[in-house]
Image 1 (tube, rainbow, N blue to C red):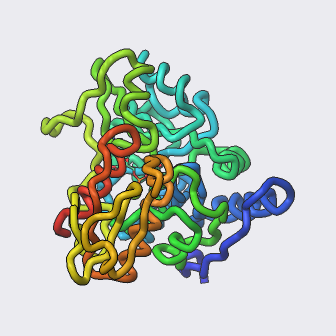
Image 2 (image 1 turned 90 degrees about the vertical axis):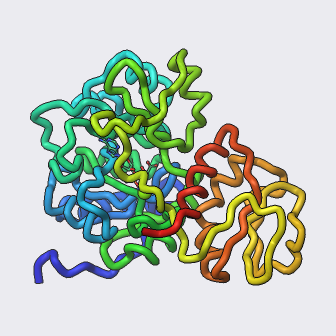
Length: 334
Ligand code: TXA
Ligand code: MG
């Protein structure tokens, strides 16, 4: 038999505190120790977690996601202290870690030499992406496991991220031993990724912490990734990403026949009553509410229509991350 047979995943209830959650975490730790994959809920999205120091386990992540090998993973650790074992912090990195950890911030740092982390997890780069998640189930899993967990979002490569246990089961259910179910991930968008590898910190991925908040803590503006191949970029930020099967039409001011509608705010566009299906991300116009439901809405509309019209979403605060995901979702697939 051996561990090459992907087991059928079990969804384990990890909601609420107490012994139920404890048992769920214990089952997760046991699976991770066997070199198996566990769906780890975080405050942002569900992650597909593996023992970062076990190359065979990390390899299973790439296979389960159908992910290009060159795309490195985020290392999830329990504390800033543990993160210092993996990466080299400059002054900016220290400030950001102090302000935002535990929480939805990922730092890309020069990688420390001689860590036990598998080269496969960092794709052989000399930098490392590290974050300290805030969700108590992620925290319990990491601390009980006792080492860094490599975890990309728990979706098929290029697909919409998973924000519920059911999304995880639909995309990678056959490859994970356990899905720790906390219900919908509270934030719903991935972490903000900032590279602190030299003087100018770079926003590699807009995410759950708005740019403005990061800049306030840094006391300076974030740079955007340059075209220079020697400068840090997020290899996973491919043009087409977070993509549904359906065609996505942005900044729609009307709904055309056959289209589903992704709405935002109290006013609906012209022809909205004829939409094949409608999801309003937030009738009151709250970007936080919109972020929390965004990926679930994309999956929902994708099941019901071949075209999705999306109304304009304000590009401020969390809107920057939502619009980033939407632009990639709308790109022609390679
Ligand atoms: O909220 C999140 O960040 C979730 C949860 C599970 O923690 N994780 C997540 O991971 O979104 P993933 O693998 O879907 O996206 C990680 C991104 C990829 O675009 C990858 O290219 C980039 O981080 N990345 C990882 N290591 C990097 C490095 N050393 N330099 C630049 N980018 C890196
Ligand atoms: Mg992802």
